Amino acid sequence: MSETKAIRAALYYQDKTPSKREIRAARTRAEALSPVRIMVRLLTLPLVALSVALSMYVRTSDYDPPEALAHLVARGGCDAARSVGLAVSYRGGLGYHARNDADGNGVACDSAEVLPVAVVENSVITEPVAIQDTFARTRMTGGAKFVKPQVKP
Image 1 (cartoon, one colour):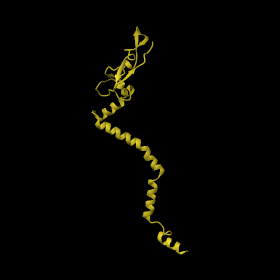
Image 2 (cartoon, one colour):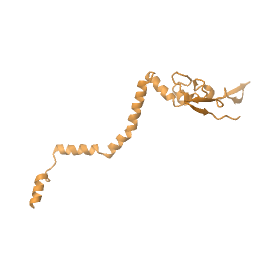
Image 3 (cartoon, helix red, strand yellow):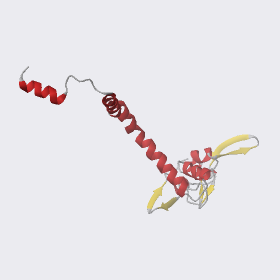
């Protein structure tokens, strides 16, 4: 062995087996840098962000927590509002959102925009007739004009 190799071997302890501490450090490093672990952490970020946003909404809402969640679900549309029991909501009340008030009368998810009523005469169902013509009305929401298409008979 040359003198340089002997000095190098003495300095770097190449023949020495690693200690328990070094083995544990290498194992911890390998686990921390595992691609699976990194991918799981990245995929859970949206879930954490959603839970934080939901928690902040519930805590800052004017309603109690169950009511705040129901109010938030009602924002999804009239079907969602019906599923949480907030089918007919009035302006300023629990479950009211302007996007669910098609005719702009202050009542969200009222029955006029949902289903036409069948006219019954002498136990015979005739043509369905709408309660009111909600499609011909226009309204202003946030400065944008929304016009529903007219239904042709």
